[in-house]
Image 1: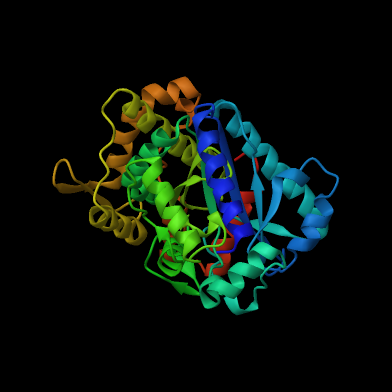
Image 2 (image 1 turned 90 degrees about the horizontal axis):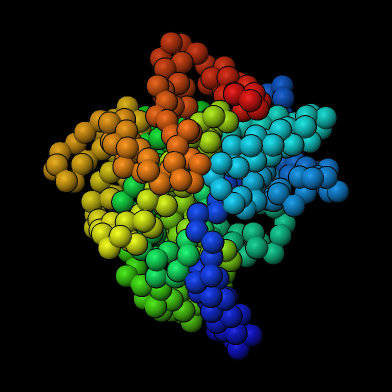
Length: 385
């Protein structure tokens, strides 16, 4: 690594640690990724640059960014002081984006995958960041036509943030089961509830469930090792499903599929935020959440990918599988005290059927993939839904 790059990495890591030490607990931001679609065919359209140009000078400009392919757009709530501000911010961003693209003849999709799009027809956006990732990853990045929802929760204290990351690892399968929305891809009923997760986390390096780092010092040594060996050139090339974000003092959870329904996006963000806050409180109380071995989390990870919310997850305390819905209900009860404090409690809910279940049910009723996806696109357009 050259001197200039070394200085940049050193500065980044040092500033990140300092930012965590002075962070304000439990401020929140949510990012949502949407497919850009032709309103007649619902095919993906490579029009991000036009959308970005149309946003220039509007209230949405600072909250709209590109995300890999030109048929995708990401919107961000920006930092909110309390979770109580998130539902309104999510609704506002969705409404702003819809108002922006509708006159352009574009509609929005928000399931984790597009049911029939050909990845070979999607263009990587022309930015220095994505040019580097294209050159580095090649087929891996070309194939990643997926759409997710990310939640950032600020955590005060560098070691404390790593403890929250370590604890959140345990619950990635539960978050995924709740969020699953992508049973179809490449015109195939995959038999999975989250094909997005299988595509993204199994393809990308440094992805999926990370190791549990015992302290910031241990984590920093590994990050420096990655930079020193040329394994990464940017900190965002650590694509783990939960990670400390080095540009913000947040724990970022990245496992969730995109959500067509606004209400379910809010509920998912509330659950994720409440888990992070509850784990931080457990750390403060001297009873930190004990990180599970990677091999055990992976067992539940696969169960969430394959069977989703109607399936079973392993309860390691009981030593047996239990219904995923029951597991989520127990976790909601566990996080409820802190959820009330941060304004998330009114939004905690396990749906009767999530987006993956609804789509699979419609397929079993005889609906086509086109009909099913049109219904999901319609759900995304109902901003108040």
